[in-house]
Amino acid sequence: MSDTQKRGDLPRNADEHIARLRYQLTQNTECGTTHYNLGVALLGKQEYMEAEKAFHDAIENSPTLAEAYVQLGGICLQRGDLEGCFRFNQRATKARAGFAEGYANMAFVLIQLVDGKDAKEDEEKIDKAIKHLKKAIIHNKYFVQAYASLGTAYYMKGLYEEGIQANLEAVQIQPEFPIAHNNLAVGYLELEDYETAISHCDKARELGYDVAPDLLKELAPHRQG
Image 1 (cartoon, rainbow, N blue to C red):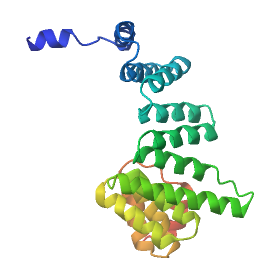
Image 2 (image 1 turned 90 degrees about the vertical axis):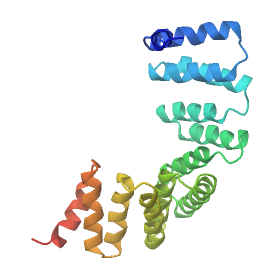
Image 3 (image 1 turned 60 degrees about the horizontal axis):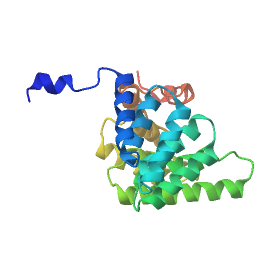
């Protein structure tokens, strides 16, 4: 088959892609992967209710398809349902042992649920988030977002040196990861290492990160020249 013929077999747009997937499902309704791909395609068109049904169908036919649980968690998050997001990601880690993304997403939800109303409950949420992030990193040692989130969780406990170390791990893996540079600026500011804080702040901005005005204001007096 020529390259031209191969290109001709590709769907021309999202609607054609969705139509092809639906046709494939008429031929094999029990293919979890096809249901999942349909859900992803529908998400791309922001057709959330239909996407949600497709992901549930994917799980019904392929119970170990952890990615489908994560997508359902993402739909819950889009609706502001943090608890639902947590539950689906928890199910993802049970569906597939060592699924790093599920652990990291659970940690993200726990961090978001810290509201300052009950110090003990907040501490427990942060500690659980740290536990989940460590699991995510064990299962994927190159998971830069997990390192950055771990750093944030440590900062929330006042453990700035540990938080800095986690973010340094992130930039060692991906030197141009702006969130980690921003986090390092915050950590080094807390340790009063202003020169290093400014360096990471400037790197984060250079990489397109929208650094908080309060952070820029705190660092401004320590800039030379």
